[in-house]
Length: 366
Image (tube, rainbow, N blue to C red; front, side, top):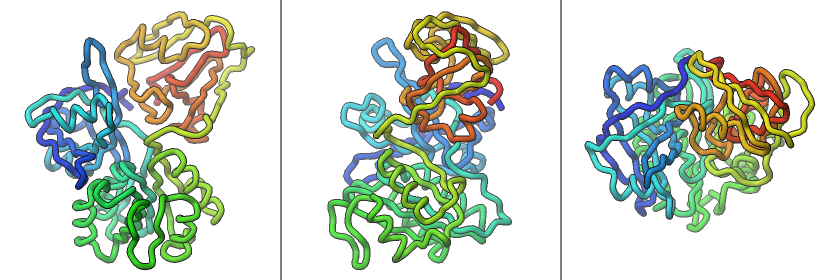
């Protein structure tokens, strides 16, 4: 699998996708020669690189378009929630215009599944706020790819005017009235008769499970939003005996206690108090650099190989993922890694601090 790289693409449009103006959709045109580089599976995200005041900022945004749209129309669409003081989001909403160029990293991420026309499944998604962005891609792709499958979406927001992609979700509902069940929940507005009011917490979910969506009737779950919501949803589903392998999660905001992990493919004494030598395998070339105590592997890699893939630097997006093949590291946050990933020795270089004098990581094996 080729390592993701940055490519320049042209902006076709910037369109509001929330009634209160708090979110926009950025549509980019991908030339034919880059279609392969931007091939993606529903649920993945891209990283935007933007020069600001002599430095580069990177932000990750999920794709809301479908793979078919990329192939047939050469388009990628990403959803951007405007964050007060956010460098890229405020730029996208206020200055970015058709014809401008953006640098995008090839899509990455493990949120989602590959759909199969022969399947007949009931999928369900629990999304809060901008967490609907990758879910929209999943829903649209499932409905167009698996004619025997159906989708239920529980979508929480503070109010109706802050909900993203309401029109597009409504259009999908109109085209597939028997296959898409869409439930909106608002924490600051009166709900429709028979629906609970409030945020998507465990109590609300239990009410929805008992009235509308028995977990035993769902084959796979997609959960996307803030860490607290994701954790409560996972706990609620576990309480109903749902197999963890059937629950796919994506965090949009880290929070709560850090989930610490140690990766130990090669043993060795763990100290973390001494300088280390970090060797990086990337594009078939090995680079070795010293690293001061307490610094992350990504700190070392950026200094020596500035083309290294990374984005959020908080352990959420997974863009900086690599594999430890020698030595040991400790990670404060491992949100973007599954248990299987960690067992294989995969790490998030932005979170990994060496515990041995030598650490060797490989970007090419993933």
